Length: 362
Length: 261
Image (cartoon, rainbow over all chains, first blue to last red; front, side):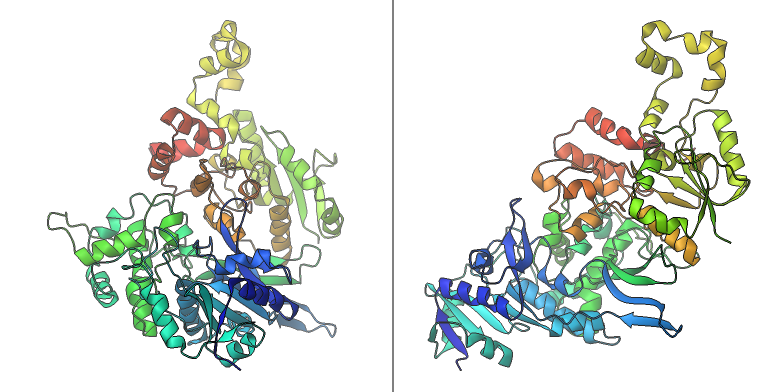
């Protein structure tokens, strides 16, 4: 079996659409409102699969949210037939194919795979993730004006994909990266590519340079600058317009915080479901603890925490240069136009000399 | 003993009680588990004490405040049912006007001075502020919205029956737009109250292509100055913005923009 193939766009679409006979295919699709969403594809619906090869984006929500859908039921409880109290975990192992994942989102999935398997593993995430094959699409051009994926080291990220697709020489290169990817490629009509690395080199050479927005420093320097800026006015400056709506958290491919809630069956109050909702550190009450104290009530302190999670805390905990992947969603969807790229740029530029000292309360 | 629950209404359209009666398929289950002892929309019985009192409507007259205090004293849990009880709703817009001006608007110029001149009006206007019930009594839980969300009512009762209480998370409607995959109303070129409004409606209006008008009330820490700037950037002038806030949130805006005394 071939590790890499050249195929036409039409063959690739047929291949993706036909995967629907063995597993649910989730693919990006542009809705009537112009927004791109990852949605289930009807088996064999080749036209609807076109989004897999489309370079517009990013999607409204990152595709990795598939592994932790909002409001998911973690377990049910209630009396068993013998009268004992019974808790049933709910794990979703339905086989899926997630297609058309761009490198920034792929890198986010790769990071989340590490986070969710580490320490206290999340069986709900892992069950869905392990049952899901991923076909990625390398970007030939920035998908939006907010993109800064190269600055965040995501542009050439392939790990986590079973097959990577890329436009090369007017055709599509399909490169298997896992044994599962190799078996998936068995169904794709194409001709073998003997030297995929050379093909990748040509794909990269055809890309614009720089790719998306560039930052005036490395990710490592950004991490150091973030840590050094603890008392810097940068947090207040980038928070005055903040509405605390939580959108930046909820659309972020590496935000995974959640809260739980119980749904009780009103007809059988001894039975119910434990559900999980997305939460985020910019939302009011996120850091409220028993007794009512909120140890991060101040918005600037919340902003500082969010940015530190991306550039300092999680990178230190999980050994990666940054947990921001540069997709640009948080800035694009913030109605107050607060963009983490601007914060990163200001952090790297250092505090302006004439800025007043402003201590952010913890 | 089955929990005894009761419904009361003050200044309101009683639409929230009707919204609850519309949970027909679940009401029969519910009646096996609770005793409904007072419900003007559905029955005429009266009770002396209640486990849960659901109170619909805003408080206008002192006589209403007294009645509400009496209900509070007889109830273990008191729940604000809907926007009128939770925020004062549309009628709280009257708080921005003098009683005389309000009279002239509603009944015509000839009636302008009647509120002062006619002593029969004095008890009615002795208290000229439309109040959410929380300004009069302690409230244990809020079921927000105009009208209430029937599922939230059922969820609340399920929790009461199980001996717990659902959380009231002070999150914006934006969180529910995101969970539902709704494209932002602002990106459609419209303006929206969602960023400063209590969630819990599952973004019912924006999911159907409309905007959020804020019927669930302003969040306690809403950054109205920043929200006003966003609305201005999207083409609304201050008069239009005030009208948007005051549609459902007049009482809430006064509290946030004017601050504590």
